[in-house]
Amino acid sequence: MIEIKDLSKSFEDLAALKNVNIKVNKGSVYGLVGSNGAGKTTLLKTMVGVYQGDQGTCCIEGQEVFENVEIKAKIIFIPDALYFFSTYSVRDMAKFYSNIYPSWNQQRFNKLKEAFGIDINKKINRLSKGMQRQVAFWLALSTMPEYLILDEPLDGLDPVMRQKVKNLIIQDVAEREMTVLISSHNLRELEDLCDTIGILHQGTLVLEKELDDLKSDVHKIQVAFKEDVPEQILQDAQILYEEIRGSVKLFIIRGNKEELTKQFNKHNPMILDILPLTLEEIFIYEMGGIGYAIENIII
Ligand SMILES: Nc1ncnc2c1ncn2[C@@H]1O[C@H](COP(=O)(O)OP(=O)(O)OP(=O)(O)O)[C@@H](O)[C@H]1O
Image 1 (cartoon, rainbow, N blue to C red):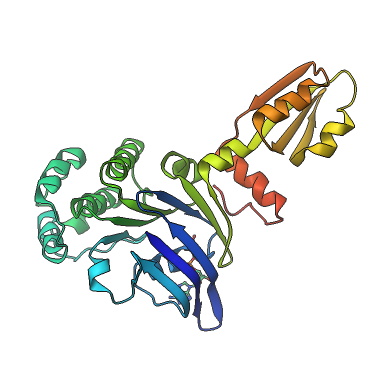
Image 2 (tube, rainbow, N blue to C red):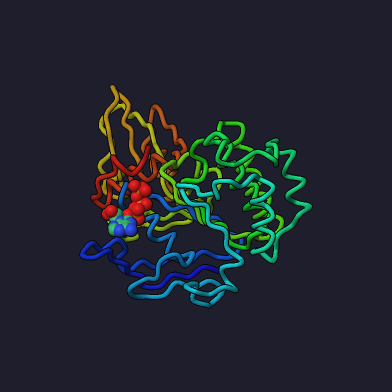
């Protein structure tokens, strides 16, 4: 389990993280979103022990990560800007990884060769950006990490490869309870992978929820009545957003679906559609509800 408690980190007079608390359970996939400069990379780098926090704790399996060789051997971090030794081929890099990660699995590496289809004798720095990212995943997954920490992981991969990599991650989570934390601007991508989502805003974690709770909690309702919408519904419901579209009213409402359906049906609507929201829509309305500017958070 990853457990971050009251973590703060500043760069000179800039507070990049302010009292952040996050818990990622074993075998779960946590998605971290936030606008540019929100502190995501700083959080990830502190989590994997590249940075030391100024205050608070950052523990994996109950032990501080910073300068902890034993814990670091269980973690793989794929940063947004990849780094490989300039003269190394894929084969050389695999040898390097096998020397530093006790859990390196050569059989897995050989098997994944089919998935990635890259010549292992090629110098990594001569490969395209997307191919280099494939190599990063290939090496990472061959170490059989217990904790996989990813910063903008799928950027630069083509759609087929994106899906392949997602499937490989899901497979490792399902088969051996790998714990994953992903920072991304792409909520559509996170929706397929994550069970919990956290939003970081100006160094503070402003929202954290399980995806299932988020999805079962908020609904898009299109409704039309002969006359105006009955006042009683408006008083009782927790409305995050409303809009008039001709004779149809659109509401984004928080609440239990069956309960809401019952409430609306009591007043004999001419039209009543209760539609699911995408994760992107949920966050727009949730964040709107608590007063944060959302425009930069989601692409
Ligand atoms: N090494 C550093 N030295 C000084 N300031 C830094 C350093 N790293 C990050 N910062 C500052 O800390 C803040 C958080 O940066 P960080 O890279 O963590 O944000 P982010 O959420 O990952 O942003 P993005 O989505 O743009 O990648 C920013 O204001 C950034 O300028």
